[in-house]
Amino acid sequence: MPSWLASFRKCRQKRGALNNPGPFRVALLGIGNPDNGDDAAGGAAIRALSPLLEGQDHVLTLDTGLAPENFTGPVRRFRPDLVLLIDAAQMDEPPGAIRWLDWTETDGLAASTHTLSPYLLGEYLSRELGCAVAVLGIQPADNTPGEPLSPAVEAAVATLAADLAALLAE
Image 1 (cartoon, rainbow, N blue to C red):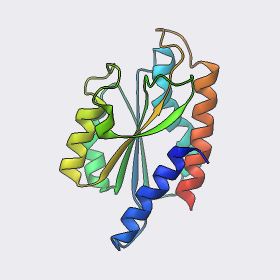
Image 2: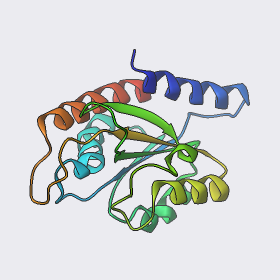
Image 3: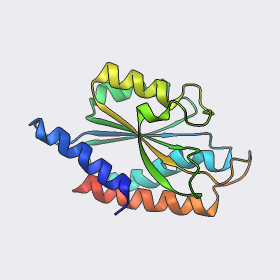
Image 4: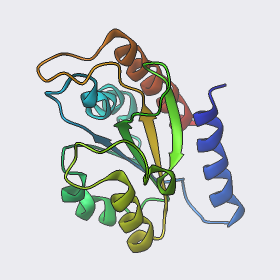
């Protein structure tokens, strides 16, 4: 089992230990530039996930592009237990590798191409909403403007979507 799946389950169990009623509410935010190769991984993951999650009212999916901070209103109204930011991240891993990162771990991550870094967004969401925040980082192979997703990242997005959809259906 990939370690990011175990981290998700651990996060969900922690909430269950607090005896919170109702389903585990998850907001999924796909972040990235759709015109810069593998930087589009976050949005691609959301587009792959959305049809798999139809009818699941405990999940919110948003393709936020370059400005995830512009979507804090819908996230706030949704009242999630977990906000999961899905983004390409330079982690010195093989292309297509997926890692669960606590938002506090993203401070030193390679410079972001977004208007607000995942670290600052995570800090804001954690403080304002009182929920858990994590980043699912996907190691890019190529962020060349005008290029499509690399095969490694395309495969990672498909795997992430299938695994996450199955996990959210549990």
